Amino acid sequence: MKKDSSVFYISSGILLLLVLFGVIFPETLESLTANVQAFITDSFGWYYLILVSLMVIVCLYFLISPLGKIRLGKQDDRPEFSTPTWYAMLFSAGMGIGLVFWGTAEPVSHYMISTPTGVEPGTNQALRDSLRFTFFHWGVHAWAIYGIVALVLAYYNFRHGKPGLISATLEPVLGKRANGTAGKVVDIISVVATVIGVATTLGFGAVQINGGLSYLFGIPAGFVAQLLIILVVTVLFMISAWTGLGKGIKILSNVNMLLAGILLLFMLILGPTQLILNLFTNTIGTYLQNLPAMSFRISPLNEDIRSWINGWTIFYWAWWIAWAPFVGIFIARVSKGRTIREFVFGVLLIPSLIGFLWFSAFGGSAMMLEHEGVANISELATEESLFGVFANYPLGLMLSIIAMTLVGTFFITSADSGTFVLGMMTTNGSLTPGNRIKFIWGFMLAAISLVLLYSGGLQALQNTMIVAALPFSVIMAMMAVSLIKSLNQEAKELGIGKIPKRQPKE
Image (cartoon, rainbow, N blue to C red):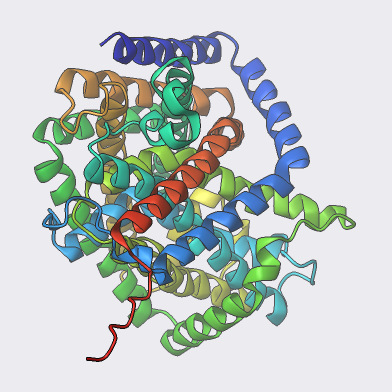
């Protein structure tokens, strides 16, 4: 218990200091995080691009290699949740709020404001590039980051009986130090990155709900409204956390997928259906065709494009890395009994395709409104762009209310999952952390989110997340090495991948 309590107290102490500093010196916090963020994106952009691309390669290797036969658990273990519920749970935890928040805003920004390849905004080429790079940011690279962390945790936890801690997965790399001070440092970094990553996303959710209320009903947008939204949602996700993983999160995840499916279906029917499907199909082709070049694109000689890469691609890679301990532990927890191949296929490919269809529907519809001169979606605030799109279609008010409800349920699911994961990380990897520890982390998530919004709004959220991601990225690389070493050793012991010797004829 000594190790458990030290990880909890040190990590919560660091985060409490951040809260107090943000309350007392909000402008200083915003300025400090902006400076550090600028240094990281300028100096380590190449590192993020290489690291994340390597995670994709490792995942694809597991998908096609004989190692994919190995089960995440004992050989007779079977999945705890049905496949549709499993998809719903990992998707809700992995990208829910982000898809709703950026579904129209990102493609429109790439099309009308700042193009990813430097072509003239508003052109047909800008439209095609906008979706291609949106797919890139939300596709297999993002899910490979989640997948590696989740796969490592599930493998060691369920197959080798290790506690559900990040440090416990590093024994093949760190040896006995994984159970000592080095392991504590790893777990503390993981907890801090998790809290900041989840709190940032909760901040996005509060801002978008506020934006919808402002756009539709004239309710003033600002910190006071966001404070009230976060307080209300905090009470709701505390109630959900009380009911446990099998009830609260499972039910909410299925509700999320139902509401998201309704919105997507309406957009496909009411929007330019044929164009949406054509954009979806065409962009998948250009995405796959250009994937290697996009993966390593840093543009060393063009400052404008490099600035775009830092502001979008590096921001997203840092966001996914900061979320990786939270999403990874949660996905690992709900994936017991699945084979590695089944796991990688489900985590890497299925959510990516759903995200591609989502952006084609919402982003494509928004860009066509701009293209045809019907509405200037690009002139709206980021958090209002989705509601601006709905306003130009039948049933717009109803769709906006469904969207705000969806953000709220995604908000609750993410916070609920976050408290569960943080409870695991600070109770020696317990699969059933107590309600008291979950409530403490729920309060901390709400407090960090409010402090970041108070100190600098959306920009402070993004800056702090990029800062938090850098140290965990090193840990993630070590986890991948650890998994490869262990799986290769187990493959030798089980004879996986060996060609059986032919028996001599009688």
